[in-house]
Image (cartoon, rainbow, N blue to C red; front, side):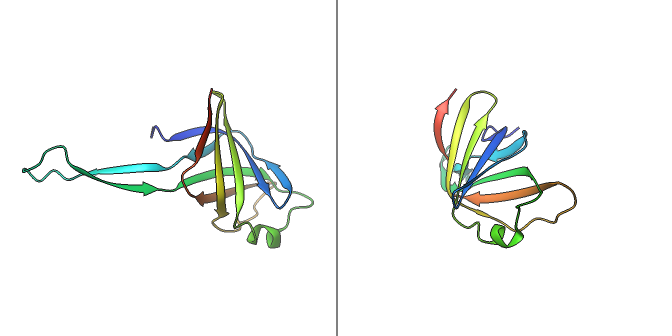
Length: 121
């Protein structure tokens, strides 16, 4: 398992609304990604690039949910609480696309900048 990926519950804060996800959300906090530049002349050298974060979670679909409102989720704050006590915050996240509605539970995919670690548990 990728050490940057954590499982937990996500609180989505958008336009004054607070939406809780089901447990077992998948959170990739983002951060530095290093690539080895092994060319035989300088062992141990690497390049580094920043990778954004992502959150895959499911929410309850029911009365009061609006696909039109979800289309506007382009500057969302995500508070990710892990079972371990760790808390990560993702600011300025966006919903990748409005999900298909198949049941009362819909899957959401958010992307944004690297998350900020607020608590290590």
